[in-house]
Picture 1 (spheres, rainbow, N blue to C red):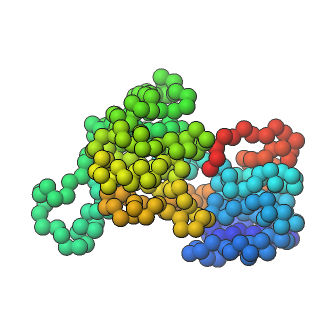
Picture 2: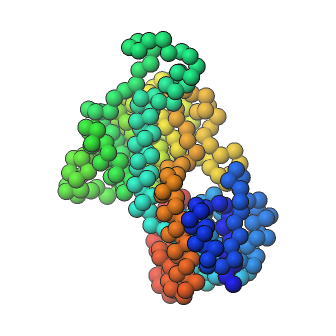
Picture 3: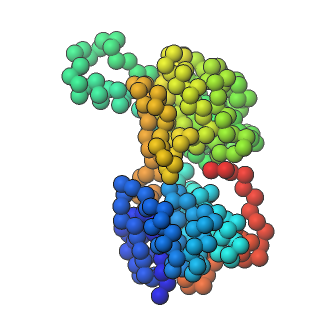
Length: 341
């Protein structure tokens, strides 16, 4: 019987289907990571490893899995899997498409934008602390969206979906991207206008960071760019933590050089020790901080898990899985991908 390891809980519908495919071991805890020593021991006799972003599958682990035949990642890029080590062992690694994930992340990004503009977390605390005394005082003011300029850095799938939502709120959209969109594409997503990145930051009322993490985008949003922002501007990051200099952001917020920020991704993340933003950001009331939950819609996570199980089912049936990251194991050319996270 095929032996399958899942290193953390997954949606019940997917877990039930997986049980029909073989002998399944699922690490049951949602409040902790599987310890490294336990993971190395658990993979030894497994034929298939289910992969999630919080659990690195490096060369040591792949080598320890002496019976390994296939790795199925519930992820669109799976950079936490050592593709070279898997390929050397003749093990295909497959992932999932990011279409549904992009829609969910765009929706979450826009929720952060609106929550920061209207200061919703602060308002909730304000009420709970018994500080509500007037309906129309100047004590608690947010900012509206319509008529404002939204800057999107990285106009890929997620950026374009955010732009459509912004257009529906009568926002003006400007963007930057490695390759400019066609005129037809710009019109379709709300008459978006292309700019150089320096111009973007000077014009923005809101900035949404959505680029892939590459060598070029790592550290892209630094003190120099942040210093160009309006005092009334708000910055949102749901791309990857290393795109943004958190120290520079904290300094700008503390000195009231920008209005606010919302972050779902950080320079330090799970499985690294003490994941999350730098300590200074946690003390500021005008920052919303969430634990990398941009895809955490119940429906989306279930779709992701079911697609991953489908890949496992295809592999067991002798069929090629969808979305193989290392087609070299099938005698094909490698995929060029400059993402580093």
